[in-house]
Image 1 (cartoon, rainbow, N blue to C red):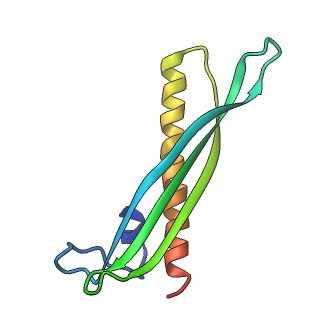
Image 2 (image 1 turned 90 degrees about the vertical axis):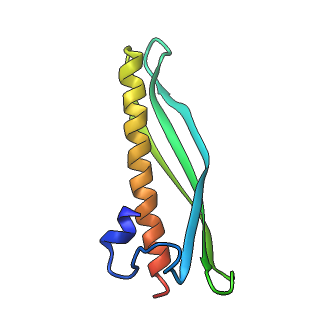
Length: 111
């Protein structure tokens, strides 16, 4: 929502005033090791997030646009589990921001 509000193409309003409704869900999230240190311990993970989104006209229910977006981002590990979990959460936030930007670009390509 914040990304749409920053742009000048769309106006974010309540459902009762909307011409179209944008819905979406994170349909996949995975974190996998991608590199190891000399002791064969994981040193870096790759997080992958997939988002499925639909834009639908309120008056007719017609699908105006539907898409699937995906992003990947790496984060380093730590011997401290709490710190590693913090890094993964931070990476999830970065992925969400990138996906929001990608979604905005896709939606505005045809306007």
